[in-house]
Length: 371
View (tube, rainbow, N blue to C red):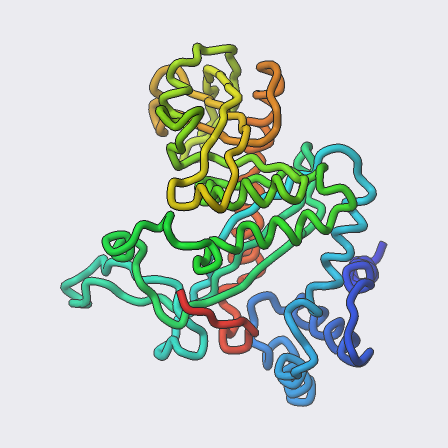
């Protein structure tokens, strides 16, 4: 098939579910995608080639009848169609990334954070402020690792930035409701992604340690969907007299498993893991125990035997609402979590292959929220 015709067919499929108040807006979006697809990372004037097309592009993005949801609706509909064509579990991988743009004045775009200056002799400021956008995306894949498309996505930026470590000196983060935190993006994406599938029970939402949020667990329970995240919080368990770590320390190893791993230099090796799992009665944070119920959750531990030469040893503690009845099921869940790297690969493709960080940040539509 002609590559040009194949690309045209793909665009038609991805935009079939788009709905705009004016059909001409849908036509303009299609034309823009063709132009931007042929000039990855280029500015709008360079991608559009002539002033008339460039002006039309600016008018499209400045149109009050064009929103982020309408632009993405076609892709979400195409993802839903691909999900419906599959059977079995649907793994939804969640992760957050940043798009950094170098600007003299960060106000038109917003802030992402503050970082220590590496060369204080050149720049005497102890910290420098970075401007750009943040994106939390949820990618649907099959248990074999086949990507089906995005199931949910959020963009935001910050009007101001206050370091998390500084805030912790003044207030316990667990006492702040999730509605006041940026971490609200996790349960919101879970709701949107679960609604994409006809049966939310098919969905297993997978996240790294940033996703160890009790509100996320409760949301999954309410929606009838499932989660599998790497634990970072030593939560209270059973009657509250011991924690998850203390409870798992009492569980003997229940099986062995070998996996292939790569170090930072890409060298492959084998890791010998000791597997153990336990169903626990997990309690909500003390400050939120009146708002949220206790949950019956499964904790899976995978600890590498020995010390590898060129990388840190594997010590995973995964937490899920899925029941585990044998070592084989625990190994299956570990394999599902290992697929999480695909969402990081997706972000790498956006930044390196699609050169998203080289786009003109001022041309991107994004709501601004305070941190």
